[in-house]
Image 1 (cartoon, rainbow, N blue to C red):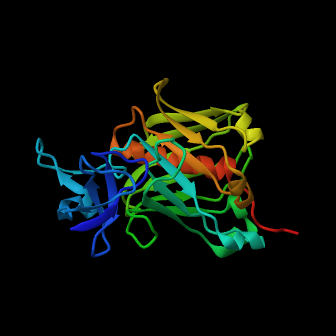
Image 2: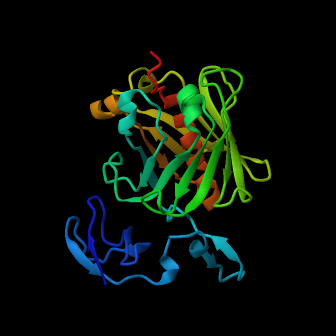
Length: 292
């Protein structure tokens, strides 16, 4: 049996992720009498619900008998991405980016229980000399910390932030770089932030776009910044960069919410996450190096 504290913002029948006695993350369903803040006993789920490795996430389709990749977001309609603060940046040094992914609480803006984590792999010399323009790889981990297995990688070559050429891009792969999921491109556009999301075959799947004339771009403390995700001209989702609070302003960290809405394909949801991460790196990441 697992002893679980029911998180705030959850409701009976909701799905949460907890650590079992062996340190693995497991998916459990809250019972009908679950009350936020209370401590309950839940049976340890079977190994089929473990989310520790990509192999454990593969399930058999009863219709075809073939393996398919389960949704790493557990079919949640929304996720919240919160950037972590690195103390070294208070000394004027660029640190590796780290993000926590959770299901947002009832207000849609506060962090819930973290079930995925993003870490950065990059060269120290590039972080110091190139800052936000550096080449890097973002690693998505199947758990609330960087010690959990990597299930997705997002690789960005060197780019020049704000330049009409040398634009940023992501190559999105699974646990292995041989498992290509797609790519994200951010071409230059006049008066609009625009990204094109392609699948592994090079077919355009959807577009993420947002106007440059938004209050949140001028005053991030005052308003959100909205991006529409559209497929064949029809809205299917939304990425929202939330307004920051004074503490986030000092720490120079950001929060994003992805509303998947009509994005149901597991791979397309992964690409939507990659799009949100590239938006942060291109339009909201600040140079934290002290060049003086």
